[in-house]
Amino acid sequence: MKRGAWIGAAAYTLWGLFPLYWTQIESVPALQIIAHRIAWSFIVLVGLLIARPRLRSSSAGALGGGLLAVSIRPYSIAAILIGLNWFLYVWGVNHGLVVGTSLGYFITPLVNVLLGVAVLRESLRPAQWLAVAMAAAGVVYLSVAYGSVPWISLALALTFGTYGLVKKKAPLPPASGLTVETGILFLPAVVFLAAVEFAGDGAFVHAGPRITLMLAGAGIVTTIPLLLFATAAQQVPLSVLGILQYISPTIQFFLGLIVFREPFARVQLIGFAAVWVALAVFAVDGWRARTPEVSLQYE
Image 1 (cartoon, rainbow, N blue to C red):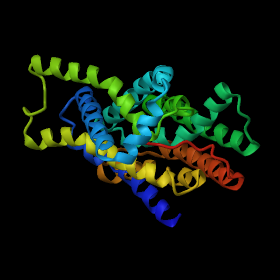
Image 2: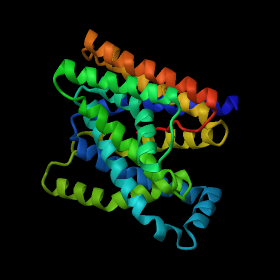
Image 3: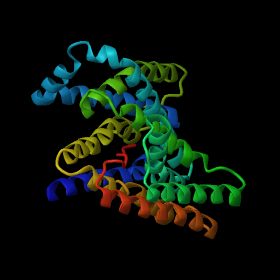
Image 4: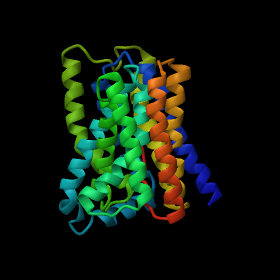
């Protein structure tokens, strides 16, 4: 379990460091970055399935018996949600909203709780209701203080929370499921990139070797933490992964403050503090109850 916890921590650490990667190619429009991320991730994942016999055989078994045909609709919805989440995240990071994106992933577990109540008719313990109420109060405070809703944070939390809801009963293994999702988006992504290239606005090859390599490397950057996470998920309890998931937005938060020097006033501190206390209540309650109600995260 100790080894699995370290592997899980590595996965969430890499996700937390993502802003350092995406800001290196911020000159490229976010839609192009996401199109490359989808296309190259699909290629890497297909290569992974081909190269690893055990993974390939398990995927083939899962895809057999018409299973994919039955589940193509939820995977299509999941593909749209994860694509939108990726776009919002990269757009936010490259527009100086790293702190805002971190807030989105801080509140994602609480959004998942609300979705579980609203859609799956799950019941909450009193401590969970308290955590949700405190987080909501923090978001409302930020909205009133700034005169606008922190839409990037809420959009990230809602898209990934809904993605998790759709994937809750997904029949395929993680790598296979993500391959299907990126496969659904692969053709639209390639068509978009071809159109951009035809219009003379493409960055790939034309923006220099460094950016070209980083656009192609988006597939590897996406899959490495996923593989680490999949390994950790097999070795440690979900309650442990639930605690580890806060590594990612915490790193993003401090990157926003220290590296990217984004403004962070007392107003933001009060709102964030309410969310952090809510998460502490939520995490402690979940740990004590030992129930897998905390969502898992990747960007």
